[in-house]
Image (spheres, rainbow, N blue to C red):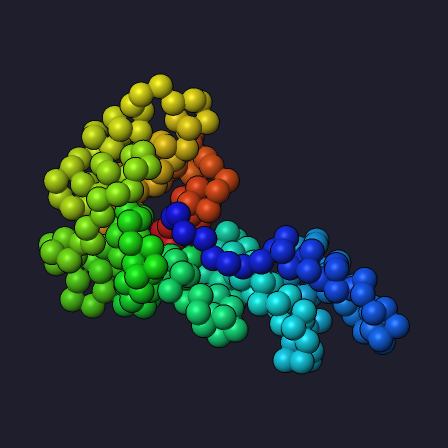
Length: 258
């Protein structure tokens, strides 16, 4: 997915570090706590950040920002660990603290898909469309949730498939055509391999191609073909960005459900 949430990590650390250096005399009573928060955030111990800010986030802007960012980042960690329920709970808390970010939160939409909360996932991708209107991936995840929502199926999902015409990433055009019913598996792979991409770009493009082929065949109920493509995305063309991790989480969750 292209759009990014404004979950401050480095910005938060820099602001907190600056805040800790000013007016030291007036902050002497809270300095130890603030330093603990900063240290925990730097080391990625978001649970500790959340615990440390439990009593102070309503009165301290710094603690509030720390707690907010910790919920977002821990939610991501939980998703990567395949802990979908916990991930949703943290993303919910982040959105409660930052309601303006709800339309941007495509990560929670992906969580909803894996939690079998397809109606909620469909709604999340619909609202995300209002702030990210030319992303094939958003259209695809909306389609996937629509297929599995109550009364949904591939035919009905195609009738309401979101039109995207300006996503220039390879091979998004072919992936969109695939889900629309006008493309095919071979065209997606051919597009991913087209031109003369660097080794890293080729790997990335094939990761995306196989991830979305895997999801497509899952929507069609073709489990073996889906598993084959997901394995290619998660292992053979493994990437460590968010969607690369989605392929890995998908492989883990589906293996555990068999």
